[in-house]
Image (cartoon, rainbow, N blue to C red):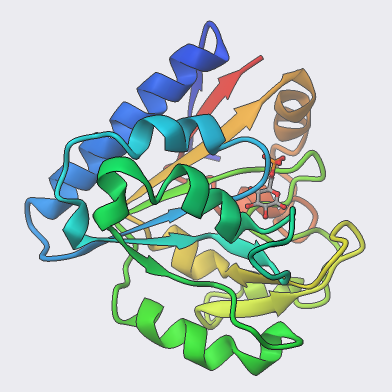
Amino acid sequence: MNYEFIEYQDREMLVIDLANQMAGDLRAALGHEDRVALAVPGGTSPGPVFDHLCAVDLDWSRVDVLLTDERWVPEDHPRSNTALLRERLLVDRAAKARYLPLYADAPEPEGALDALAAPIAAELPLAVVLLGMGADLHTASIFPGADLLEEALSPKAPILLPMRAPGAPEPRITLTAPVLNGALRKHVLIYGDEKRAVLEGARGKPPAEAPINAVLSDAVVHWAA
Ligand SMILES: O=C1O[C@H](COP(=O)(O)O)[C@@H](O)[C@H](O)[C@H]1O
């Protein structure tokens, strides 16, 4: 698998360097596009990166921000990725960005898929994507053992799919592998020895077993203990 692996001295150095790299990628993309799209993960890892990125000086009014995936819970739920984004990325200078939601007030993701995908379709390809990874090797909400795993990995996948998986306590909605791979720049954020070991142990495994392998080609993996 052809990816770059950057090991940082500590998490603070990682956060600063990653936010700077993403800002540089966005500035470069804004140099030749009217609007650019940035997709970011939720979960526990990216908050400090958002804290730095939201303050960088770039033309945020021309940036569309979206999540790589969302848990199907309302925004006031503690597990809402949207809430994290609103609190830590769509603030400061980045408050001028346009947010493309991955959640709507419907009982199940299936009821909102088309309406959520339409504004995203107009902004593809993604300019920059930041991905997280779970210790089970899921990325975005493409989980091993998920009901629509094969569909999400297919080159013919739609933009968004609902996802239910043994490792996910609620239904999910996720950008699919071809949309993530269409990004001009891909960054992956990983903390800790456990995740590094599982990533290395997954080398050569098919994406159906190790979904992270579906998006690693030409990505930059940023790691700190
Ligand atoms: O559930 C999710 O998990 C992954 C990994 O999150 P982390 O807490 O282990 O950093 C995240 O990338 C994804 O966006 C999120 O919905």
